[in-house]
Image 1 (spheres, rainbow, N blue to C red):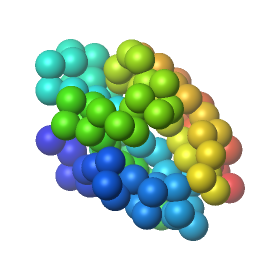
Image 2: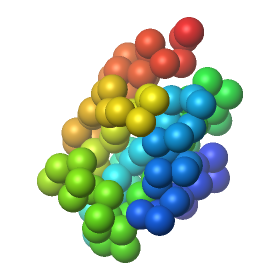
Image 3: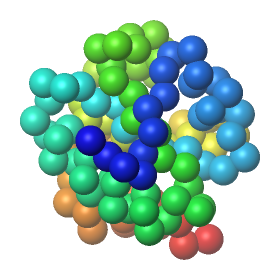
Image 4: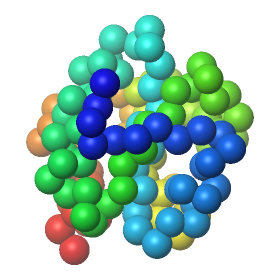
Length: 110
């Protein structure tokens, strides 16, 4: 799937996302989700360009039900940005690249 984005599991979520020094974008997705497949290559491009400022992870909600439930992720794709252990931005649904970049501008242009 995406080359610039590694998967994260429920077990790794705290150490890889919540305790990260950098902001971390987590793409909550599933194999059967069409809009998730639309968003994946866009996020991969953004990760390739801005991975030095913000980390990118993806979480399969079918394989890792605990984390999405705890953050009330009800629809996918949901993209959450975590900073200092808190959700600081949520993007729900498939968006064009420009819209996603706009939502992430404060994290990637700093």
